[in-house]
Image 1 (cartoon, rainbow, N blue to C red):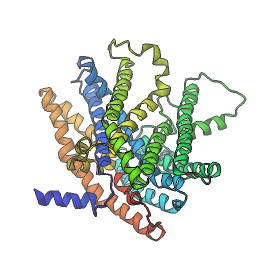
Image 2: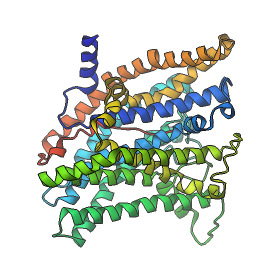
Image 3: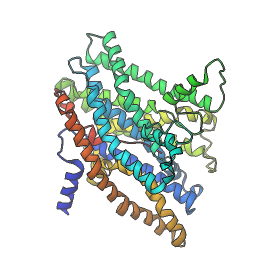
Image 4: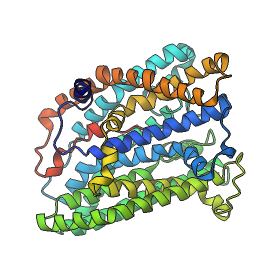
Length: 464
């Protein structure tokens, strides 16, 4: 058993880095498992029809119905991890600005090899019609990762893929967003203290959050045909919506989630600021944040529970009769993603500075392993779970419900997860290593303790 654990450690984690934030692997695993549980719930409710949500206790039903918000947590983790070097460079003028080359090469080698292989296999095995020449424009949308921007590609081939598009487009913009913020901070406070720059950086990230909410509001107005602005050429409107929201061609699109990424970026900035304080000041600040961490974690959970109940209360087929949020329901679409982001962001902040007993459940090895496999697991779980459904419907639909639930759990544990381990070992890890090799000579030398934080080991991916 010890030997098996050691081999899994070597395969998944490789050479351990001293300052890896282990707790975030567990957080990412929970985000992925939350989404998987949501999709299982949909299968049990819609396909097999063995689960009735209106028969569940309200709080449990609300949590299960909110499993898709695991994606909001994914986006917050991306904002946090990928903004770390930029936050360091903005807050401390002596830091070298992160290389555009290094950022893009590492993102490409981390994301695209496993994605392109998965896309090819999914087309060959499940959607061969996409091999026909007439479907080439649709395939190109998936190849370029803009499949969230058209009605013929949104949630096609594989439901979770559209969120990879959101994630990828954030990668494309992040270095430019960070550079713009950095130039503004340095222009306004060229000789200020890190503390002053932190507050100014926080202000700009608040503006970025506001832009995310505003673009969602504008997109929803166009989607619902509330606004009709004939003076604006349609092509301008469409380009704006594709870049900042999605598209109005199909209802139900979710925007670009800038409010979630910005929350993660702010947590990242606070983390870097505290880590780089003078020793005595740093220790005092960390001690205060640690004492606050249980309260922060509870506050974050309460915010999330409130948002989950609000979402559940709006479900058209659920007679919850909560009547708590009815007066606010018209605003749900505008602020819901921000609400999820704030709740998850507060919880992540609490875990980063929390007591060991608060972090320990998220640092449990098996949970961390799932977190490290979460990219492939996120991409493949829905399609592979759906392959079991016809077998259940045809052969064992008369089984007790508990056995059907256990069948899906066994399918996940003994087929899907081992396949994702193989994908990680053969494709993902070599891609990460190649990215490191290609950027090794261009890597800046770390001057702070946080500079060696391994953002690759914490890579997250998206939602359905």
